[in-house]
Length: 236
Image (cartoon, rainbow, N blue to C red):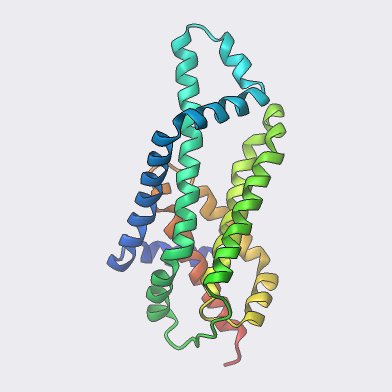
């Protein structure tokens, strides 16, 4: 199965009744979580954002913008640009940790009913994988901030999203069915496929409205790709 085949099957499964609930609740949970945190700690968040904008010179520029309502509007837009990725990132993690079992069952029962479960991964491994993914995702954003000053920073979100998706979903996609050795082999042998899926599903996260389905679409695509590759790897 190619990366495009996996995406096609993910799109096919996306609007089934078993999947639609998994589309809704992680995104809704993430949205409510960040709204609650934002309302509770708005003063602290606003201060951190202002410090960050000051560190890269944007706050100084905003102070010179006239009339002030334009500057305030730009600052509000920048806050929104931070809020949306936080919601998306949280929804991705919730989907990976808690939505994947239901999605794996739906995909496996339909397309891979004879594929034996070896349970090479587990909840602890899934949580640890998510921690590593989020940590490196944050580090990537921080260390590449200077690139925004020279215009190269526009590619950072796409690279970061690609890395996060492939790191976050590849583990959970095959953890139930593959053994530990099979998982390690697939991570190494199919690196190009994982990255390709990460990039394509990452791009979806930047398309308005369609990005609401982004976490589950990514999960389904990685499940299809991973289980298909696992089936090919095993002897007939």
